[in-house]
Length: 109
Image 1 (cartoon, one colour):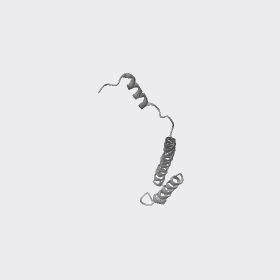
Image 2 (cartoon, helix red, strand yellow; image 1 turned 60 degrees about the horizontal axis):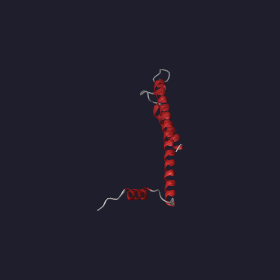
Image 3 (cartoon, one colour; image 1 turned 90 degrees about the vertical axis):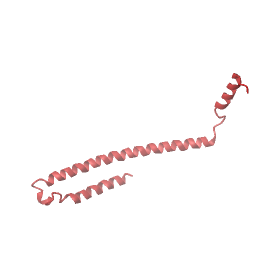
Image 4 (cartoon, rainbow, N blue to C red; image 1 turned 180 degrees about the vertical axis):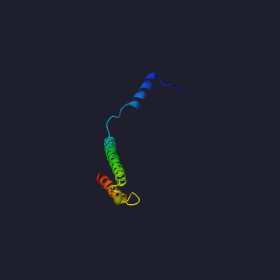
């Protein structure tokens, strides 16, 4: 078997590496589908960042409210309202806060 000369090798590589002669309709449809997928993933990432940021902020607010409730319930002025376990008001207020937190997050979806 003989080795191809440089001209034959260049012609063969040129034919193999040449761009397609015309763009096919399937390529355009595939490209449009990929671009839509990338845009949808970017929008989803933005929505997730917004959701996570608001969730962290609202969780911090709930934690601050619980700390304030705990501090107020341990004061002598509010001790009769707190009850013997120091958490008499906490369960209903916790329920209200968590329902509010869940409701605001659900409305954003």
